[in-house]
Length: 479
Image 1: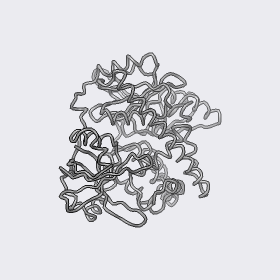
Image 2: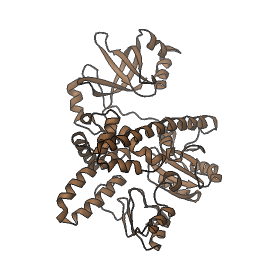
Image 3: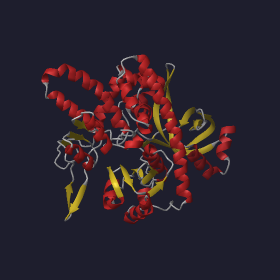
Image 4: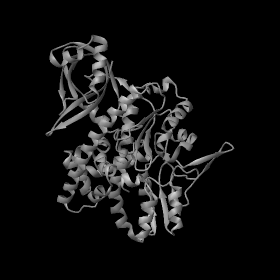
């Protein structure tokens, strides 16, 4: 689908085009469970539709009992179905499609060799998708990501290897972080801004020169997407502060000029800042489209079901959703979602789970190596978080092309000094320092030698550069 013309998932136009080209079978991936009208259209044309999805199944409540509304497809493969007994339903849409391919191969035992080769290659893509769709890295997901990373470090597919190369990633040092914040976004950028064909072409490349050229284009598109996203986030935050939304429990933000494909990313950033469920809506070719990102205590899809009359189309799950609606209904939707919301102030508070208080002198290379055995880290399996009270901050210097990161010289007792880095919002650091030492205190730390006592949380890791390894302290929170 073309993101602007077709939106996400099945559309009548896509089905009609496929039928006109003589296509008789459609298999969906990561969508379709909420596309009953479109699937009915395809069936009416004599086409066969197989749905593979992982989103919540649409339902209605009758007498307090839920009744699922399944599309009239030849098969609906979704672990969220009530009658599905798959042992781990928390897999992403790409992994559901992977399982269908696996089942098809297993039904043809004469193709065992080809099956093994193909599934090894596809496992790498399943790992990327699992991380990028922010699935919990538990149970089967943990195994898929761990094994996918293992293969990408030693024998990545040509397309993935090219993306690593243009982004300066050494295969041996590849982590789940790179999948979620570098590789995945590059592959995703073309589908957000145009169509996914460029990424598909990359994965099908057989010549290194062609693969590197496409990978470079995808990186450029992702850089452009990041700039557009930052502008959208800034406008969204301005509206929250100036349009009287700061007191809303559920944020509904209308950005008419924003590229509709960026709504979900912007919603996620705004949710992180304000700690509230967030919907970002944009003006599309046909009405308004939008995406939502939730907090743990708020089931976004269930909330949308309760006010489904506002939507011409919607779908999703607990933590994320997509929708289409008429522009005139936006104010009423905002009121209804907030009136219906039972979240309390406690639900909005940021919770920091500290694993243990750990002196920096104890956090050595041996421990950092042992922590690597717990990888891959991600949702539901976060990096261990350590804390230290009253650390002496002696000096600081800015890092990064825009100077938006920092490296600090710190000490616990004045006898041994450490370097610690911070890749977060320097505004948070400034706020913590000036709350204790007054206005301008943070700036002084970057200009002269100081002695500020600040309590911190941090991650422990190993930084490799030009063959040299050193223990790295990555600061996370300050007070």
